[in-house]
Length: 544
Image 1 (cartoon, helix red, strand yellow):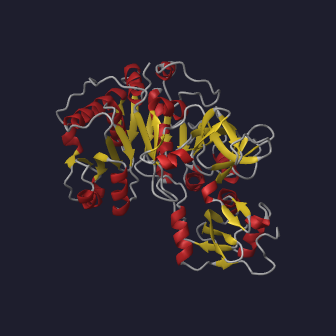
Image 2: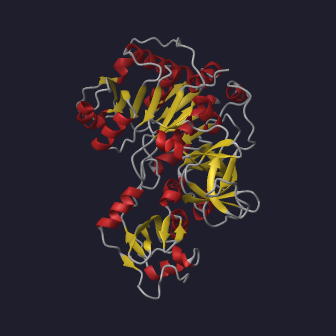
């Protein structure tokens, strides 16, 4: 049994050739058509000398060509590399070099950036351009011309479960890093190879496609860009099971609801509040039919209790799921919410996934009620690409077993569930007290006039750091800062309340909808705050 991403897709093609596999805009392909075009691309790339172990970058917004590129790479036993489409020349120069790209598929609009970095990236020897409606000049080969005349047959070498999957992190706090997984391991953790709800591993590589034959299949809409792992692992397991995947070129809330209506979408996957809140606003502005939706699933970002309640009001017959994890650990836990479920304040509270534990600073499991770092064993990544030092820093041994520790802090509750607190490297040390931004962000966003917020630490002479917030108000709203301060103090301890607040037109976020903390740090350094707490009686650690 060779569990491999390309093999899993090909089993689905054999089972569901005539089903619709992928939809983006006005285009749709069946499984057989998607397979044929992916094979054509793979044959073209092979003709350029690209094969096993070579790295193929994808620099594009969502499209059918994105899925074809991912599949073609794995068919050749090559490695697909996600490239953030907001990156500019310096960032591209770093990533193309660090990822050792030999080929690149990019949208035409990004051609000037690609051409500008070519002199500094000599390994990148072949480029394909996907048409996007722009007329920007390019030196890359046209994608459709590359496919033309290539065979559609599946005649590739045998693959291995040890083939490499790499996911580059978003670089929210530093340079992007490539997290390496074996195909079998990432499938087990993120691709449905272990049942999320029962924790039981699937018996073989055919189980998903065989189960898919028992029903006509579901329709799944992945709202995030495919440069993000949450979208990749919403789309790929859906294809493995014979489901239809709907993509949008970019996240636009009204377009999401139109796609749900048009395609009768059953499952919607989002990235936390940053997508849920605009969707809630758009739903209220339109007269949309969302009766087909049975599940609304958030991954990889804060999905606050207030927003969950609003989603349940919007979709009363749907099940909400809140999954937590990281590029370095994969899926570590899931919370399931239906209408009428009481929502606890604070971070996501989830049932832990298989082999997930919480450990203390001595790498020992914590007792119930205590706080520590999330660690996950079992199927774990190999480490960071070309960075053995950082690789060594994220693995520990607990009771003789190897665990990955990506840096997320959590509390092990008395009932065995886990409450996520936040990333340790983003925690704020204010006068010796540790504050996790996500908890304060949730308190801020529960205020009726606040649409979005990011919380960071800024330098403070007395406390080392003080809690600061960047706040985006709802349209046509104003804010009473003292009232906002009181609202937050009713929900978190006094030392966690922001001492400085910046009002911004829009909170900076990455294309994945994750927080852009580098933007936030730069903004607070370059602009005076809109409000500052009084010095004296409002000591950050007085617990007031």
